[in-house]
Length: 77
Image 1 (cartoon, one colour):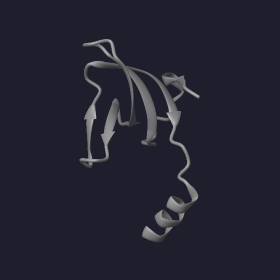
Image 2 (cartoon, helix red, strand yellow):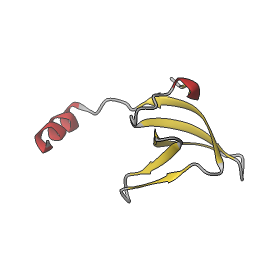
Image 3 (spheres, helix red, strand yellow):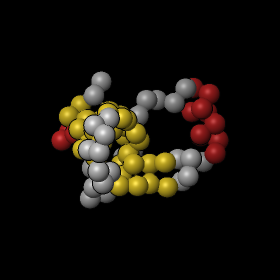
Image 4 (cartoon, rainbow, N blue to C red):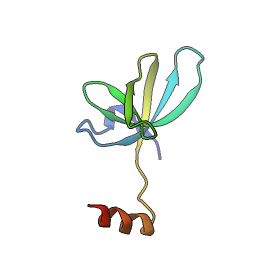
């Protein structure tokens, strides 16, 4: 369930955010984290970018990993 962005964690926790593109008015969602501003995470490039032309409006926590992936994640540590 989406929550208002004012309630989002600001401790670097990765979450899913909903944002409105100011250029085309489109509504999208992306993984992001807060570090003095919202930053979109691009795991495919191991990079991040600022939401410079967007209004971030809502957030939700990341879903739990499926059990198989949880086991693999623990093994990788």
